[in-house]
Image (cartoon, rainbow, N blue to C red; front, side):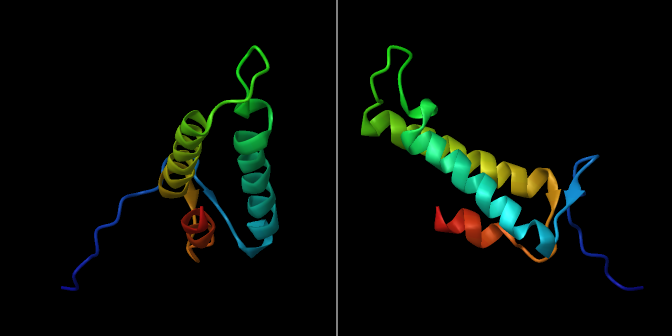
Length: 88
């Protein structure tokens, strides 16, 4: 009998991504990154921009959420998101 490789199953409702989604993913990641670094998310409620320590923590959380999204919520057979996340 052939050995079956064990891989975790994707989450219910996981969406497969294809080459047609590449530009959409790139743009969505770019918009979210811009928000973290220079958009509304990079400012305190009083209007002062966050210091680099808080911005770095926000960036780390953003990267972690992308990795979680890639590993749990999409089916990415060609590993399209891998290089995008690795470059961050």
